[in-house]
Image (cartoon, rainbow, N blue to C red; front, side, top):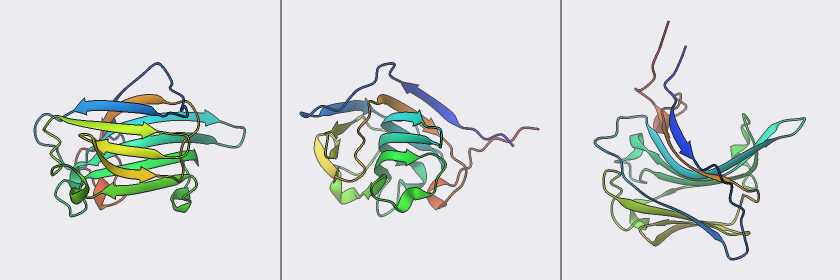
Length: 173
């Protein structure tokens, strides 16, 4: 079984957090109507391996097309710090911290077809997410510490929950 995965662009340079902070900013929009099950992301990322496992640091803006009309809104803001890949350690706030941004927190209702500026401000002890300059979330747990690349992607995940149910899965013989 082969599933449509998506595509991604990323920087060749890694960025390190400094005391005065680092800002990642993108002005983006999506052309046309988003099909159900698509995840579009603007994020920083790095992974490293030890003899025991592969770990990752990450700061995310994730936009879930199945959540465009939901009460809590389609934007998921997350941090990951030394998160063991392929684990189920989502309940450990020291390594994973995630929260939906509600419609009331954004400057206007989320419309991914309109140009919008998304910014991630990364500091040694916290992360802030901004939409069109307005602060929408601050996290002080699971703050990444390692140098990361900056990335933009879209993908159709395997169905794990209602938010991720995908009609974009492609099957080949």
